[in-house]
Amino acid sequence: MTTFSDLGLSAPILDAITSLGFETPTEIQEKAIPHLLGGDADFIGLAQTGTGKTAAFGLPLLDLLDPEADFTQAIVLAPTRELGQQIAEQLALFSGKQKGIRTLAVYGGANIAMQIKALKKTRHVVIATPGRLIDLVKRKAIHLEQVRYVVLDEADEMLNMGFKEELDTILGFTPEEKQTWLFSATMPKEIRRMVKDYMTDPFEVRIDPKTVVNTNIEHQYAVVHPKDKAEALTRFLDLDPELYGVVFCRTKMDTQKLAEHLIKGGYRADAIHGDLSQAARDRVMMRFKQRDLQVLIATDVAARGIDVNDLTHVFHFALPNDQAYYTHRSGRTARAGKKGISMSLIGFKEKYKINHLEKGLGVEFARVEVPLADAVVETRLRSWAMGLMAEEEGAAPPQELVEQIDLLLGPLSKEDMIARLVARELGRLNLGHRADLNDRGPKKKGFKKDGQSFKGGTSAGGFKKPFKKGGYKKDGYGKDGYKKGGYKKDSYQKGKPGGYKKKPVWDDDGFATGGGDWAPREGSGGYRKSMSGGAKKGGYKKGKPGGFKKGPGGPKKGGYKKRW
Image (cartoon, rainbow, N blue to C red; front, side):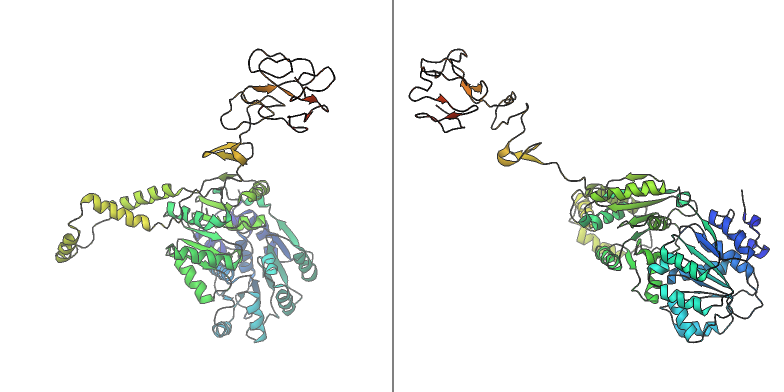
């Protein structure tokens, strides 16, 4: 098994990462570090978030710096303030055993005057967001003419955020004789163009996404109607008070709307997105890290750089279109060997997205049910009661106050007291409507009669599909139903093709008298044909095949008279 000591890193770097608990390099670290330490070519590293890319470029970069030089030797560009801060923090830790290496993070939303003041001292590595770096260059607060190394972290995300022109501008400030290291999760056309324009014969390392899926993550999904997603999320929060996680939405508006809904319901939640000021973002993140917040609502971009341990859950309020983003999101949980759950809330018609993720990432998803309201009530009330029992006695309240409360509550029995306490706690659960939120797909069409539903037919009139093919029954007709091709009622039943006959015997005119055996007389269809080929008065005569035409007193063509 390869260790960091096998990769050619210096002793101070090895001492620093050993003290941090680093033992075995990840695949991207194992392949990138030896090549970057060679220091003679451009480099492309394609790997997902959570694979250790910061150490993959940060460790060799620190080893290549000259602490005696009094100019900026390297710049690291990141798409967001959070990611820039995280990179700066990690580089500071990695260089903890080195002497004289100084780093600085600069980004928008922070006081630029303070950053200009900090840059008056030599900074060997500057970690920056593109817009703020250009601003500082134009103010002549930083000079890039002697930069030896340019690192583009999350390059695909920077292009997605519209930083194409800024990147071109920054790379134009740097000398031609430099090394460019590009790290990205994907390689779109714009990245290829940048490689062609600014890099020379780069060495490329590609890590298969399937090999980096954290096996400690349990992938789950629940099927709910889109309008019920927020309510479904609260059910999971209510059921597990120890849940601690991030909820991912697709847009800034979605994050704010969901956060406001949860806060209004009394949940410990807040949102983080690009419209927040740096001070507001810092306050939200501080509250989340201190667990004052149970869940953080975030967009994919705003979540870049969020480095919080012990997350139990990641919720996908809306699934991303790119599988790489799903891996980014899910990788927030199950860190440091711990278990975690990645749960997707999807509509019934989005099941295909789960199938694509299973095939693309080589993982299995388990369908789970949104907890029923009654289950939430039972679990929370039991937890509440056990919490009361386990609560240690604090300082004794004043005796006078206890006596006053005793007088007020004296009329209540123990049962009344418990009932009122339970009712009060129940009112705090914010269960909304108590319906089953699980979407089981469109219901099969059927029909209903007298409060009972039947499958397989139309609802008009309460008809039910017959037991035998070809007919229908209504209002209590027997299970025997109707045989194919005809109907019977009272004493009618199918006769020969094209007609019906009445069960009893026939009189001389070919009509039934109401009793006797089945005995059709001559003539097609069970009616007696007269000697002249027509029916006698008041009867029927044979018309075209398959029907009868009205004779004197008979029905119209093609129809039958129900009663004689």
